[in-house]
Amino acid sequence: MSEVRDFMRSTFSRCRVFLAFVGAAALVSVGAQTPPAPNPAKQAVELRQATYKLIGANFKPIGDVLQGRAAYAATDVKKRATRVAFLSELANENFPDISNTGLPNTKAKADIWSERADFDKRLAEFAQHARALAQVAAQDSQDKLGGDAFKSAAGALAQDCRGCHDKYREK
Image 1 (tube, helix red, strand yellow):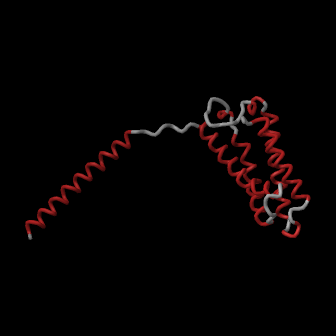
Image 2 (cartoon, one colour; image 1 turned 135 degrees about the vertical axis):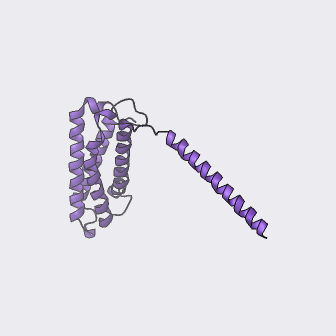
Image 3 (tube, helix red, strand yellow; image 1 turned 90 degrees about the vertical axis):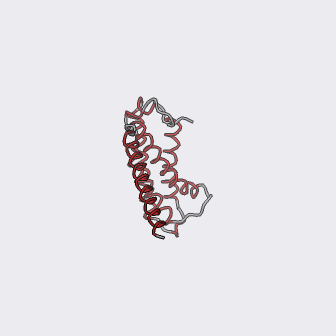
């Protein structure tokens, strides 16, 4: 019995030493590989895409209400409109000059940077209309069932999206 116990202890000790050696070798191997430096242009595009994906995900249900495909729910519209208003304020930060050329996976046209004044004006109007929609939604109640003020504010915001996409986004 004692021999078996000694054999087991010896085997476990060898295994621990072996695993420690393998672990140390793996750490040295991983440490030797430095990760690539972050690409600021790529990061800007990814942030831009994430922001607009969130805007779209929050505005789509509002658009569905506007087009009669979903029932008006004041609480949900208020929550989503508030999110869109917040995200619209971030939109103008997502188009730095560094992100204007030579990047894959972006549908942003170069016209954004060559017609910057018009583009910035459109972004400012988008943010203004998003805030207006959030204000209407905050004041609206379930009783109004998405009245004219809601339809007007949501329609203006939808038009901003459509106009900018038509001019500054690749199909």
